[in-house]
Image (cartoon, rainbow, N blue to C red; front, side, top):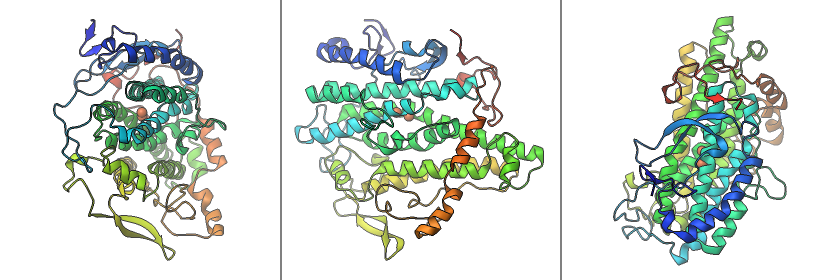
Amino acid sequence: MDEIGNVDYSTKIPNNVGLSEDRQVLRALEAWHPGFVDWWRQMGPDGFQDSQVYLRTAVSVDPKGWAKFDYVRMPDYRWGILLASKEESRKIPFGRHYGEDAWQQVPGEYRAMLRRLVVIQGDTEPASVEQQRHLGKTAPSLYDLRNVFQVNVEEARHLWAMVYLLHKYFGRDGREEAKQLLQRRSGSVDKPRMLGAFNEATPDWLSFHMFTFFTDRDGKMQLESLAQSGFDPLSRTCRFMLTEEAHHMFVGETGIGRTLQRTCEAMRHAGVENPNDIDKVRSLGVIDLPTMQKKLNLHYSLSLDLFGSEVSTNAANAFSCGIKGRFHETKIDDDHKLEHSTYPVLKLVDGRIKRVDEPALTAINMRLRDDYTNDCQRGLDRWNKIIEKSGVAFRLELPHVAFHRQIGEFRDLKVSPGGQVLDNAAWKAGNDKWLPSTADGDFIQSLMKPVTEPGQFATWIAPPRVGIDNKPGDFEYVKVAP
Ligand SMILES: [Fe+2]
Ligand SMILES: [Fe+2]
């Protein structure tokens, strides 16, 4: 067996799960493979399939050795099945099975619930590749071009991760679900992806960076709670996916940070003091800060919908059964069963939004969403530091969680970013101030001119402080012509 680190590259599908001794699953995955390649060709990045891209590939799952950088054509990327190392005698860390041995097989009574969670997670992975497929043509630099491709190949690997679980643990219906993961399409009318935010378009690079900051961060929270699962193979899969996910959020956070930096620099340079003088700021070829705030409002609110209803018996069940835990479950100081505790949930009471104590079990989604909001806020604090340092008087803020929602407690309400419940007229009047308008979208689109000269960047975004893999500023991250 030809092994690099602990990943077996001798089979067509690199893996550290002993596929060469698991003939049945190997055959099922090999049968699924051609459909995956077809999907990648059809729905993966538009163009650039013959370009050499400087990508990292996992060659081992241990913390030091998993990222190896080299030029590779995207269709030749070694999508593999990689699980974090097994923790000996791991115990289920929450729910009514608390303290029992983690399951190495799917418990029969939880099979349907587990399969559904794996399918929902699996569906988001190819969806984001589909949403981002046109971005290559307008990349602001080769550095950014490489980053979107890195995110794309890794999301495709996450699809492999979920498809492995389906094939290995869910028999015939798992194979059927795996097939359907290649058939749904983001934004399709007849066969859409399962979750709303994954059917929205990602029309420009600002949307992409907002998406990787806000929506990939929802992914992180979901993976963190599944990483706690009593079903050990799911836990191990998610733990490794989280190491890749961190890079996606880095791309989003630094992408927005560089955009803010460039806007503020241009304003200072041109002596524009008022951040709300939108026409003047836009004439500098950069994105004005109020538009950044509107994009943030949109992507944050769409991502909040991914957490589902604040109060949910499904979430309570998944927790009680030991299938899906809380963020940092093992670090929380409580009984991990929650049968007698409460959690404050935001609700509409007599026309006002208030916190009301609910049984903690049914409030699991609300709690995860709160953890998400705190995580987002830390990113915003770092963005605000960039603005503050430049001397421009402007602050980005997360809108109220009731703003612009389609799912949960606030879905039928009109609420301002400040948290005020509004009538229709007031909502209509404020709409263009709070969410990107068609004109805003057109302006952003007008800046999306591709830059393919090594070391050069579009007008609207600053270069990164450090290169990927510590490469110098003029490194050719993508050799566009094969
Ligand atoms: Fe992912
Ligand atoms: Fe991601």
